[in-house]
Image: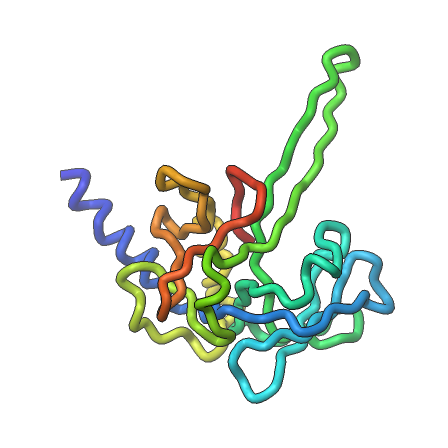
Length: 198
């Protein structure tokens, strides 16, 4: 009886994910934001006529040399947002993990955060602009633009975490693995074993 009650809720959450327009993007250029120490400004090919300008807070975590020419996941239907004077048209999704270390002598805590790009497990098969979906949502139609008041991304973000299927942990939503819509590529960070996606 409990199972029948939870089934519609799970379906509804998965339908919510179908409203996100997550695409594979190829990073063409990366430069440091002139007015913000923590920001990069990227030009990313997401399968449109012209690359998108995206501002990301990844400068302290990802070296430029490890960012340029990479395939990444881009949330494309967020409303455009000006970040320190530059309009950003999307968001690069990454894996992150927070580590808390307690000093045994002083009992003080040190918190560090590790952030890594989510890369396709078979980059030779993916193309910029290919949608990223979960099983059962292959034909879903994303919203043209997510309405801030509905908080669709915020509701989905808390359910984006890693899932291990016996091998390396991969990005998943509500325990459903994220896959590219055409070639079925999976997405994983290089070193993190357990992480959240944001």
